[in-house]
Length: 572
Image 1 (cartoon, one colour):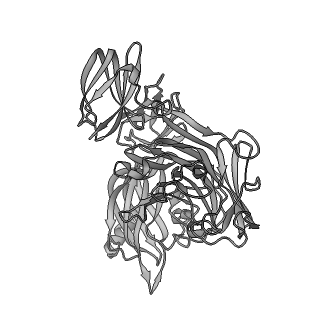
Image 2: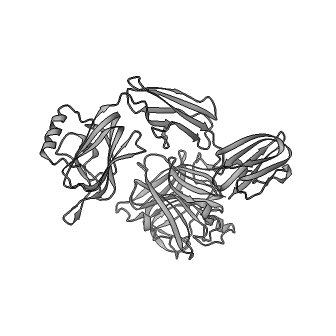
Image 3: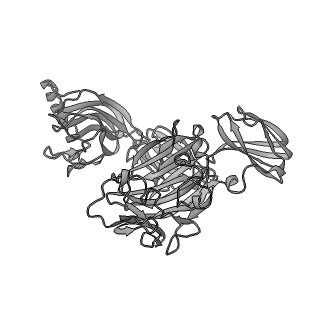
């Protein structure tokens, strides 16, 4: 809605005498900043300053009002670079957003958007189409972003929940009951902290006493008129640590765990037009102060195997461990220099690639991409973005892939956990437990083989891009590498024929029978991520059961007084 008629201007001027801009001097978050035109300049009350974004779509600016308000309206004073299409969105937790207005024909000047008393703490302008000035493209530019409303004293909701100090990404202020599966290796009740939507509301937290257990949060509104209860049901993961390197030593990477891949397989060079040679020298990979350092260096280096000379060196490590299914985590800091291309990834151990570890062990019988490639973390010239990808052949045998990316701040100076959860059904890639890319593995046969882990820094190439002229060296630092699996997968497989447990039919449509040679006390059904689906007390030798879950592969744990067995059941 445009503030063009004179009577509307007079009305707003009159009502503004009795209203306060609650966005004034509040904190902001922006998708990008151009020059020194920071987001704070859009809420400083000064018409001579402004926020300006990059020359890309989409872009956004978020104002944090610090507490919940019943919001009346938003006023945006645009500079010449305005939005022709944008949304005004509201949130109480900065994660789930509600669109309250969708502007499709903006024409600059001052926009006024009515919010009709809706409660929120965060207000976002989300621009999807910029104006064109002459023949030039610009970004989004706002002189002032003003918000008007009144404190919502009857609000008893939460705006945020932290679990062990990390944001609970599944949280929504209007969802009150949660099931939370703890990360592998965590077997104690987590610490829960919260933020109320209205800063004057009060709350009490009653922690779970053990696992599994429930933590309860009771919230009372500032005026005492409303109460609300949130519950979090914590369950310990059934994953077990099966392989890791904590880098708690000094010197070269542990040769029982890591292989330096140094043979350049493409006529004296590496793939993707990369500009480095990989070496096994301590200068390029070493462990110190509890972490692995992979170092890219600008230096003229003649490769001893191919005779070719490159102007950069780095390291490429292959794990001497391969696995299928489970969770893999790498805690790392990434190089900041332009032109570096750090990667955390896996390849099928059956790949035929000269110099790769598993090729030297006699497993190299499958060409890329038939072996499958999982890129858990790759970073190009945009050091605020992390990408993930799955590479496999298309119907003609050519490389195809699916990819996605997510914003990650301060990757050079702060630790982030780059992870993969891999099952027969799905593969999920995440950063700090936030999933950003998923593959439907049930319909892809190229990720059901064992994979090994690769850590490396490439220079230049298709993703690294132009190398900074002043580049001398930079480091990818790795705090740990860990692989978790369900215990049956790491202790000899699913089928122990000596126990005499039989499950049929298998595959099943969901209805199946369990028989054992002795009395069955309990049957527990898990999905392939280790999450308990259901459990049954039995006290007999045979039972008929039904899985009311989507088609997938499930693990059936059958236990009695003197036995325990785990079977795999396929549900079609």
